[in-house]
Length: 236
Ligand SMILES: [Fe+2]
Ligand SMILES: [Fe+2]
Image: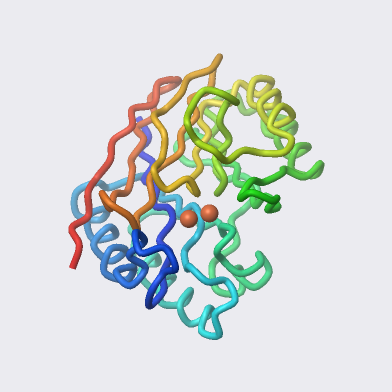
């Protein structure tokens, strides 16, 4: 069994435009989440799936990311941090955060992560280069579980109430099928979705840390079965 912890949509700010988002609680919520991860949850890997800050153009955006990084660094597990559409552009973001490897193998499970281009309507698109990375995900003969991470959730069209998708979703889903992807995890849609199983793949969008009910998510992966649980983090 491999345990993945997922934290998404922290939206750190003094005040977010949307009052539902408690960006001003970010440091507290993240600190509490990391403490619970280390003390109780003990994941094998932690994924932070974007929108770490609320305003990508804020003059203090790098300082804010540094504050968040200093908390994330305390997790006693390998971690993967991806930017979202509220974060600075990847080259700036990865001046502060460690840039994840194209593929990371942990206890026989391979993690591939993607930074997708933003499209109008808070949608996304996956580049030809990244579609080719999906094609190559098992090229070295990896036959174990394969987990795909990104900010905007990859979900089968029509399967959930998530209003956000990819302009080339069919190209992405066809590769999930071709690679017998085990699990796809995204954030971005703050309400999250139930896990959806299509063919060999479980598709999941996790809830935001910054909004009611203030949760992070764990996924326990046993071969092809994914068990999802949410963990509430108390506010300040
Ligand atoms: Fe978000
Ligand atoms: Fe987002």
